[in-house]
Length: 318
Ligand SMILES: NC(=O)c1ccc[n+]([C@@H]2O[C@H](COP(=O)([O-])OP(=O)(O)OC[C@H]3O[C@@H](n4cnc5c(N)ncnc54)[C@H](OP(=O)(O)O)[C@@H]3O)[C@@H](O)[C@H]2O)c1
Image 1 (tube, helix red, strand yellow):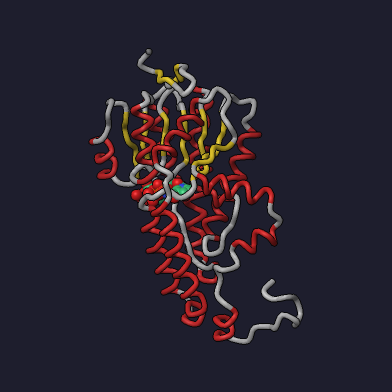
Image 2: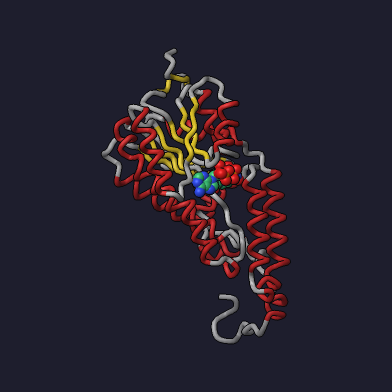
């Protein structure tokens, strides 16, 4: 077996040449596991991190001496351009770009201020396209692959994760358009949609959620507090109980990079597959019912002020 090949599920050697695979958001969670896994499979890996200490920690776990890191903040155009210059100056091209970096804002939309929404979209959408723009020349040289990480919430917008879902829907749309635009360029574009996987993102979600409630006007926070707190607890519980692993995620990314005909979407975990299925088969109003227990009760709204009766104007709450 050549140094630049690993055996895929069908027993064929997959090509790992053509320059490194760049993984953004490799300091923790899925990005870190994926970067280390790709290196074990024989790829050269360029791990994007925001802090030198995170890069050094990754290097300490490098198994084959084929991993290096670059400081990349996807919301900082200079840093994105510098990463492209880094690849240009050291590598023949780019074998893959895994757009994994992301944050998750969980809060009732009434409490999401514009700065927070911008941060969500800048990180998970605008920054991802900046990475694509900067690295496409290298990807074209290697006939490489773009792998965009979205989520089951790129198909179904659930209450209290609207800002995050908006970013994931947008990233799905960018991926579809990009795949069609690049169809004859030699560069493949796939989406990997993980369901819930226990990573540090869940702790960060709670911290951002606390910020949202404490910075909202007290009357607004009061309406949502009980239902939002219950939602966060249930959501964190689902993540803690999820049997989907970072390794399954890394396997899906490796397939997206090496399948001879890459799929448009790889779903990781039963919840991601269910979200996709439900979004396809259920009419909106039926899907609404699945989330009917999440929002504040009618009594909680009434405490905050008058609410139209169901026979007033349009039927409550639509
Ligand atoms: N875990 C899940 O259940 C799950 C489910 C569906 C989808 N996803 C998606 O999977 C991806 C990875 O999530 P995760 O669970 O591994 O979360 P995580 O452990 O919180 O990792 C997020 C990574 O993104 C990086 N990042 C955040 N903002 C960045 C920026 N402006 N520029 C560059 N890097 C930035 C973080 O770097 P710092 O350490 O410097 O902050 C970190 O490396 C995300 O896109 C997420 O939406 C996760």
